[in-house]
Image (tube, rainbow, N blue to C red):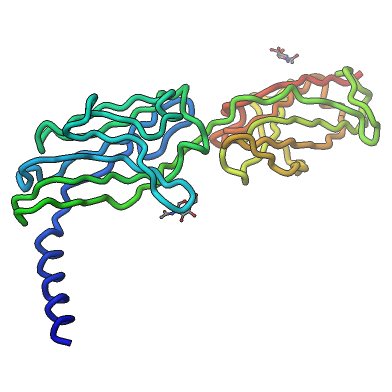
Length: 272
Ligand SMILES: *[C@@H]1O[C@H](CO)[C@@H](O)[C@H](O)[C@H]1NC(C)=O
Ligand SMILES: *[C@@H]1O[C@H](CO)[C@@H](O)[C@H](O)[C@H]1NC(C)=O
């Protein structure tokens, strides 16, 4: 019984004296715009004056349930920066040093053209061993894991396909009699949010700008490739005598106003 109490007290003393965190992790930026931003993760020292020396810094990544070292920098290692994840080594760079507590850091950079989604968007943490002058002993500390998030912008959308309602084939025609019910279908990327869809806008000859179609589109299920979802969207539209020259657009990645989509295609219909 006595032994247990002593241990508990000792543990409390040690953990409170060692509790100052001397390692931090930063993702720059926190939310990566896929294919537009490099993915950068930096392990660096906080409160370097509390440390006499840093022996190693490791960057670890969560693979399934455990964290595994990706790359490390250590004293006595030649070269000082060494990769464990040789697959990532082929498409990333790492720099770092443990020369002094104030300069010690480890930086991983994956070029924007080499980032792989979702593979690279796991949880990361930094681990460090140093000699602390607060506890006069070697200490090993790690950061909390951080999760990188990403945004993927849609860029690819097909030209709208057109068929007369209830027909089995698309038609290349773009001119129809008044009263014809046409069905327009557009397939394209919608981004990394599965709830996003493709929407339709029109502009008639006498109108100043595109406005969203009142017709409710029928959306297909979203299919995923990498981190990008693709869908199609179909509307049915009945041509009136006002459709002397009507432009339709389908788009995704828009900010609300018609025509602001990052992926956009047009089709022109006339009556006659
Ligand atoms: C590691 O990632 C998996 C999913 O890939 C997750 O289920 C698990 O909770 C993560 N583990 C930790 C410790 O974060
Ligand atoms: C539709 O009409 C507009 C305006 O005349 C023109 O600029 C555009 O190229 C046309 N688009 C197609 C797909 O024919």
